[in-house]
Image (tube, rainbow, N blue to C red):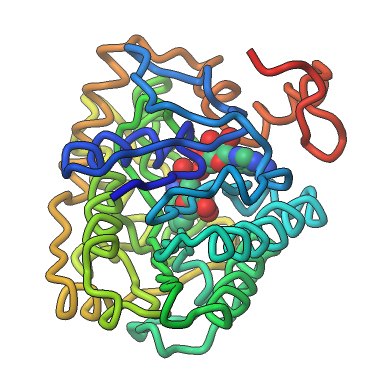
Length: 342
Ligand SMILES: NC(=O)c1ccc[n+]([C@@H]2O[C@H](COP(=O)([O-])OP(=O)(O)OC[C@H]3O[C@@H](n4cnc5c(N)ncnc54)[C@H](O)[C@@H]3O)[C@@H](O)[C@H]2O)c1
């Protein structure tokens, strides 16, 4: 298939593209390149790509593709809270516009990177895809709105699929330090401490970046009648863990690391345990990566590349990096590039 991957120069895109290519897909990327240079270790080989803001994509740029895998977004809660209007402009309006233009261009399948954050604070019971959506942030709300608006476009010529990913973990050359396991391993590596800034009881579902890519591959190849307008949680029940459990896995793999649970009331009210049986039963998905394996992988990569505290806090953390791009006049107030693309 000819596949357009938006956000191909992000954390997940950089891992997903080679997996789609190895499966035989002909991949083109589309990205504004916010994090193109935020690389740890050897520079990855990107596919041919279009450097354009999602808000400015034209129908011509979408012609000739069989499928769009839509990853591009302002991708975390703190950023969404700081700039909710821009989050809605990019994550909601531009995503719906992308789907509309893709359909007009004759693209038949549209895979959307949604999130398990759509369930909000769901307590102890496992939530499946039919659970009420209770988004707690503009980021999660934008994902809910895209699912609804793009589902309404589905017909015999256009097959949207919504992949509600658990929080990702694991190494990507375009690392993200602001997601829980990557963050805890980084702090343990850099400071010797694993600090949990809460009582550690909130539940988090996690999934490795490569397992997410495998799920997208299955959704790309599945018969349209099976996945048409369907939502799938992406992850594994065995990786539904409390933040304290996640932290203990980190202590186990980082030599000398000490666990510190501060017991404060956490700033992040999310807590949910997720049922992943639909993706397993319908598409045969099995997550391959456990938290201890992911923590060990991250520790090895951080050590091998000589990760520094400065890069960890700035280059690999989405919000400060975007603030730096704005302060340097590379992005304007609306997060559009003001300088010519390299
Ligand atoms: N990483 C996770 O834990 C996780 C979990 C659930 C869902 N998701 C979703 O998966 C997708 C990818 O996440 P990620 O972790 O790779 O995020 P990321 O921030 O690493 O990558 C996002 C990419 O989108 C691009 N982008 C952002 N705004 C753009 C715009 N206006 N125009 C063009 N490109 C733009 C960025 O340059 C970046 O390369 C996102 O939609 C995110 O919401 C991620």
